Image (cartoon, rainbow, N blue to C red; front, side):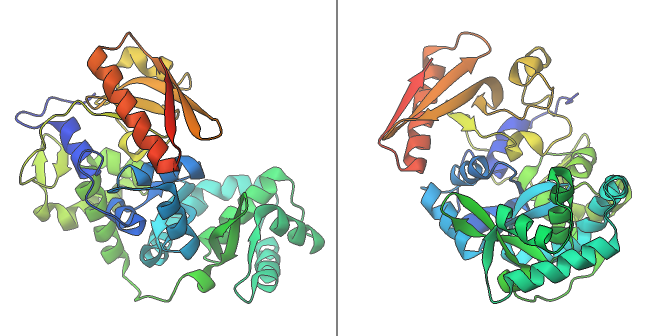
Amino acid sequence: MIRIMPKLNLIQLRLQNQHLAEPQFTKPADIVKWLGAVQAQDYNGAKWALGQRLKNGTDKIVEQAFNDGDILRTHVMRPTWHFVAREDIRWLLELTSARVHAIAATRHRQLELDDKVFAKCIDTLNKVLEGDKQMARIELGSELKKAGIKTDEQRFIHIMMEMELRQIICSGGVQGKHLTYALFDDRVPRTRTTTREESLAMLADRYFRAHGPATLQDFVWWSGLTVTDCRAGLEMVKRKLASNEGYWFIEPENIAAKSAKAYLLSNYDEYIVSYKDRSATIHEKNINKADPRGTIFNHTIIINGKIEGIWKREFKKEAVVIDIIPFKPLSPAANSAIQSAAKRYARFLGLKEALVKM
């Protein structure tokens, strides 16, 4: 459980450091670089996670950065998809891919995926994507099948993840309704090689600056690295950090005043998913209400830094309809704050109206 941190508002500092309370950046790549990596298996939800951390962020701005390759989407930690800044993707993969390989090794044996199969996949993908081509997932599955590679659903998922980890492919842009893949080297310029120690220090620095106050155990969870590696990374940067009862963070010049803001967070938002211990953001009695799986991977309503409900959405011609499901009756002030958050979401999407169903 979260322990009391005297004279320190843990929730407010996290909102501030994650740029939810006080967005400072205007470019999607800048906020992604600040956070280190942003969980992104739900592409549209992850775009909103970036958008509300930007000044005047819109879906168009975020998607343009994605199409241009300023931010890329790949398997890099734990393992799951993350947005990463183009300039960070090489050193991040070189640092974390071995751990992801270790996690996937047993499943690869069960699926009869070995280096011989992967070599054939690499050869096929290099041929069909050469010349800066970008192709949708279904198209690449078809090309692998033509090459004699079995691509049932689970096998294909692991093949594509392995190709990302080996820096063969990464995200391309969006074509119509489809996300595409491109050759990694076509999207990512060569950069200076960093040592493992340098990479550990950079990742630790990004994590505790952007997510602090956080513990070593939180960093282990978020990065997917070993406790030994994470402790080494923290040791290299802790002289820059303040600490309080096991929490590490950047000492703020000032703590932003508490506001009556509400946030409509997407599923897998960094404010929740990047900590092993989430008791600071939700009362234990509400965990099953937020997500029966106990993982809190639904869209959540944040009021005064706490999860106070979940939300769902549907779209009409020029409006987004937001269904609010609070854990308990909300105050008029909280309802007003949610209305404001909903309007911000509509602006992000480029829609004229947000219709909130309380």
